[in-house]
Image (cartoon, rainbow, N blue to C red; front, top):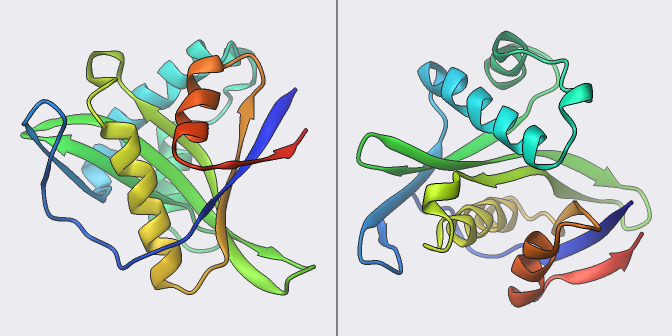
Length: 165
């Protein structure tokens, strides 16, 4: 089961470092090719948390091809502090036929456990929303597993609407 959510698309993209709740500087920016393996490790961590490792059949090479190859494309923003990656957001455009408008689908939003509660997820989500807004896209949509209370609360606190399961 899952809960579907929607958040507004707004504002231009920004990649400058922004102080986190704890005063450190966290930068949100597009992934670089050499970071795909690290993001894959985080993706594996997400699959373990969501109890979905049995369907984790991709590979870092497949993610790299989807990011930098030809054909259908995904995008990834990473949260960086110094040399460390703290989290990532993986998203891609989808077309909403009823509204005849494009939107972004947020496939993954993950923050490493040690960085949770520092505003990293909030900054990643805001980065995705800024990209959608700068492209004139209608919304950012996602699904959350219905048992994932921390994620459900995270999105509710940011004004997301539950679109039902």
